[in-house]
Image 1: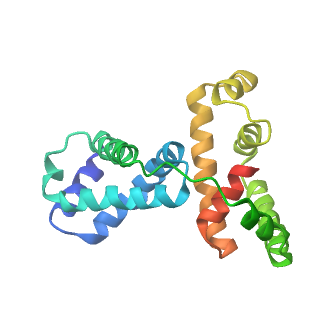
Image 2: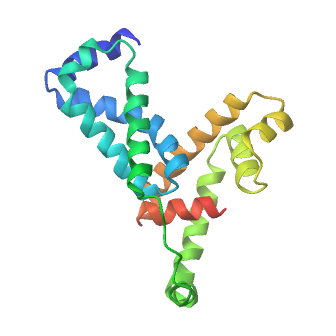
Length: 192
């Protein structure tokens, strides 16, 4: 753990909300993709992320004694995911086909979908070339990280890093430019 982060944690332990916000901004980008992978729900992933940080805040007085804060965040996050599975919150009901058909044939929905698709295309085009290539191989060709790594001659961890960065960027881009609920947008990203 770097010295600056250790100092930030000491400030958080004293109740410094600005220091805590720095921690939240840094680690949200790390834990959100993990939560999304396991929970398969953007809304639930965001709720659990908030719960993780709430737990860290409530136990802030212990932070100066934590020698591996990234590991600590990971353990808290993993435990929250396990709790979700244990509570059975990840079981979903089958969608109502009639409601889905009605929503899809609604002219307003069709227009919104076209606008959303245009925003999504611009967001993807804004990615750096290699990151865009990796993202499209994952989403369009449905390749695994291992398959992408083999095809591009890079490590699986490099592929994962690019995907995490791409998803974080796209999520932020959509929030800035779409003005609609992030859960709907994220569902749309995963359909690409």
